[in-house]
Length: 95
Image (cartoon, rainbow, N blue to C red; front, side):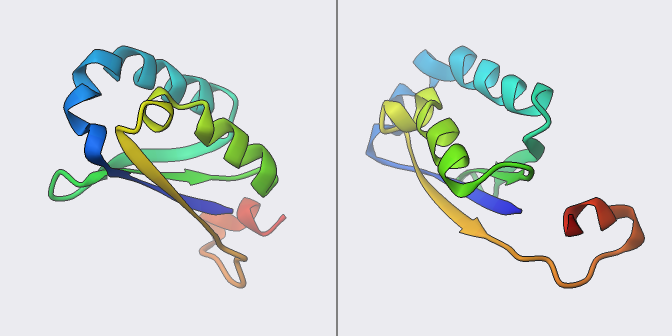
């Protein structure tokens, strides 16, 4: 399982220009079942993603395809988590 932080970078002013493509990229990640949750970092610092079911290399490739990453709007930080215990609702993460 991975947590991805997409923190705003120097190209932040270009965000409106690439927002539709970024939203389409997020939708694809959710539709593919790779993204479990997508949300905003507060206060207005960027975004965060919980991802599952892919290798780190596969996730890095996917993250680099985000228009916000490619255009320098955000800088991505990927943190890998090895779950040790979960609430029963999240047992699928143990696989």
